[in-house]
Image: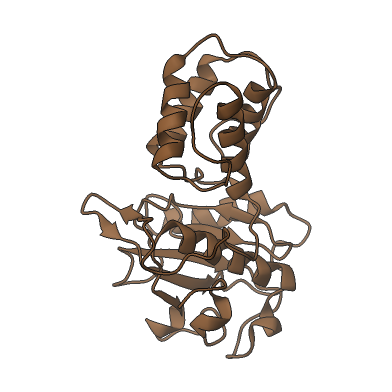
Length: 266
């Protein structure tokens, strides 16, 4: 997500608006600059408009397709939706995760805050899950198809959407689920104020083991990147496995927080 926000910041600045530094971090300056850009509505064209369209596609707010150098009502609506979501990607967006957070490292206690639901639960917990699918599940199918299947399973439970905030696949691709500002359905009793991401294993989990026993290096690298992104967005004070809250193997190993947190987390 960082690179998409950086692209928006740089493009807005090139168009004469003030979204703050092009650092890839969503904050009050970026929000205000992009609101001013959206509210201008017309008179904007050129390569920066192309860049804004590309970023909004990658964040899930525009459909993939030809891009124009001229500002359109579709860009107005997409940018408005991103602003309303407080800079977070839309469900189903594919996000390139990195293993490191923004520099300098942000620790719990930094000024960024993320709240969930109408009651405004401060997000401070990150829960790691497994999809509990057998090894080889989904072989030869696209990740987007597998994500849609997981979502159908959850809808069949009577839930209004996929329960996770995202799913991470063996090739390291991250597909976003519920928006971070929405309460998930992934850990009974601890959904409010938490983020839950699920990893797809390449081997069937029938026992507790090490992360490498069940997941690819690309998957494990990606989950660390997601956690780093979460720690930069809100003061995450606890990183845990689902098995800490329920009598389950999920995610198949004991989560030691220090092994999964970004540099500087304490």
